Image 1 (spheres, one colour):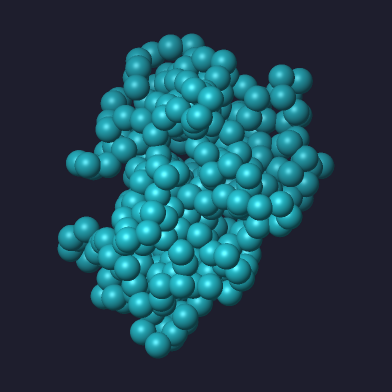
Image 2: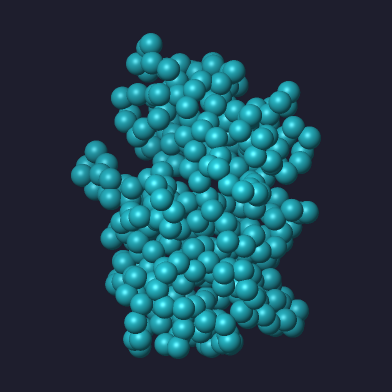
Length: 356
């Protein structure tokens, strides 16, 4: 698998309150999200983005489930107070598992992209400029920024793209600097550091260079959140309250309406809304996002489920928490033929979960 994680930030409001009156933030979907983060209009009509505020709150941090020796990350980013300032906006970056070495992309005072290496942990580290682009990010508006870091002591690769154009490429680099494999992607701020300026972020992806598909820059992508619109062909979970359709019970974050599985191996599928109309859509992957929690002592687990044609596939087990949290299962290929998704195949498929 090369595609590891996607998020369009459409389906959650970071300032929605939990039962204790505190903001839910990312409900566990990010490892860390600034407590001051808000939801704002996205870069498309009827979509949302996250606003990462300037200041000590930090930005957005996503840890992977396993370390990688190469990472590719991309996001649509808008600098809110776009003006000349001594504080260079930090757009995005990756960091190793030892929290020692980070590669990050900033925008300089002249609008050119700057690639830095941050060596050390937290405030004790230091920043080293290693390349500056000729290509610029014109003032204001959204820009799609991508960064690839391939580790090596003398054969490492660093590449940066803006709006599909290669802006920085460095080969034969030492991209390890005595650190470990890569684990973390971040937006707006190095983990533990303040955000230099306020950023809006949308349509985020993380990939690596393994596998045979999605193993290079994906380009300016969009991530659409499509909700269940009808029950599917598999209906083995219990719906609360009784008499409610399963797809309606999972259509919001109200814990008074839900579905549950009393035993392992039970499956529930849904018909989801079709893809938005696009001229020539290319589907890089489908990520099932489940708001779920365990309801008893011991280990609670669930698997993501896809039904495509005559084929059914499940994801690896996802471990549930005591509180409701977003859990993700990514299906990079259509199990019906083990091929890349098409618009028609996606619209005909059902998605859901299996109790484990």
